[in-house]
Image (cartoon, rainbow, N blue to C red; front, side, top):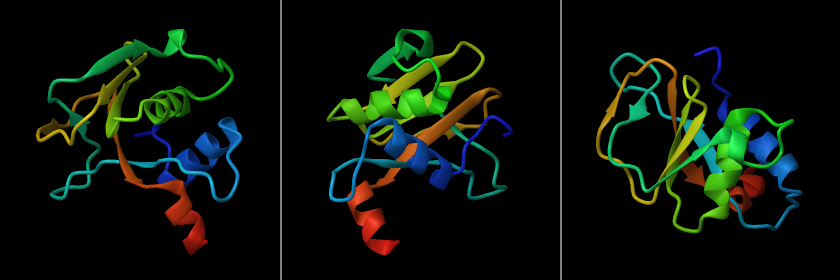
Length: 121
């Protein structure tokens, strides 16, 4: 789990990377955890779109943030896996129904829109 970012870290980094300002619509993400033992999960349902992190812009940003920006740019994107073993972003346009613990894979869910979160801060 050393490669994972907390929900707030990812929210802040995506916000900074997209020149976000209060009132803008956006997505906030969190790593999905098992309700049984708290382990990090990976969605194993079929993905809708896959991209190599190296093909995404902003080389200076953490890979998870680049995947989050990619998901945010896709209107239908609901969540994504980040695979650190092959540097891939796997996007889901629906809520995946099956998750497992897989090494080097983190499943990030959209938790709410950024506009809602800023109202709570």
